[in-house]
Image 1 (cartoon, rainbow, N blue to C red):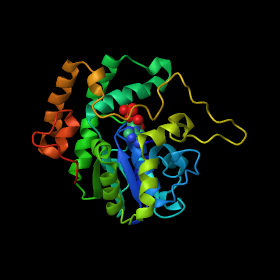
Image 2 (cartoon, rainbow, N blue to C red):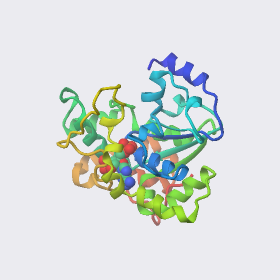
Image 3 (cartoon, rainbow, N blue to C red):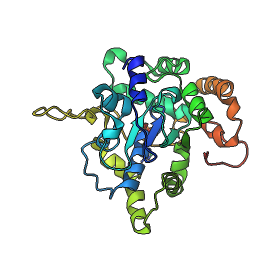
Image 4 (cartoon, rainbow, N blue to C red):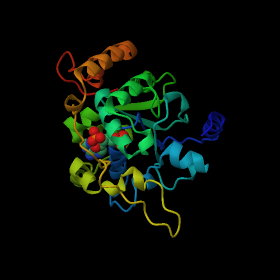
Length: 286
Ligand code: A3P
């Protein structure tokens, strides 16, 4: 989408307090947050072919089709986005910003590129260099994270860490529910936690796979999922980068992390750097 079209789309946005934006840098647990919000706001029946039908991708599904957020059925209206802070439509709604340790993001992103056309694929070392320079789709992880956490315009933002969800899913789900003004019926909690587990989501990988996001035209078959490529719900690990990245690259990443995100200056966010927090392990909270 061209920049002026984005501005026009954003200008026409009629925000509602009930709108929920799930925003992340790619591969930071976006789909997990979409599933948590879906489970919190519905009976969680999984009656969708793809999660994009219940929380559509703003810049890939809505904007190119000129579909307005205000035309989405039901309340709350939930959208997913990878847009930078300055580019997101502004309104009185709620913005859930998901963050993940940048080194795990690199690895997850690299495996994701295995689904790209061969001519666009590069080896891991080259991918790492491009990531560090922001020469990958959605640009610099460092800038994305810094801008959203800084939240200069005072949007109603909740920062949720992938690591925090991994460590204690129930606590993360409750925090998201509180932020969205949702009261969880205790009878629903086991279903919510079970369906947001890695095992359940992996079992239903086809509902989340990127190959299935675009709905087929009438009469057109569903796009097949290539079983030779990593599944979308792939490993779901914290710290998996240690098995795949050269320690020298991790040092380079940490040096850039300190340069870009030093201002965060807070143990809560150190987890994003791949280093343990200085004090006791702390959850990421706003
Ligand atoms: P890995 O590739 O490290 O496995 P996004 O949705 O932003 O593209 O992020 C995808 C990452 O989130 C993948 O990471 C995927 O496995 C992980 N993920 C998705 N659902 C998850 C869950 N329920 N538990 C843990 N990780 C999950």
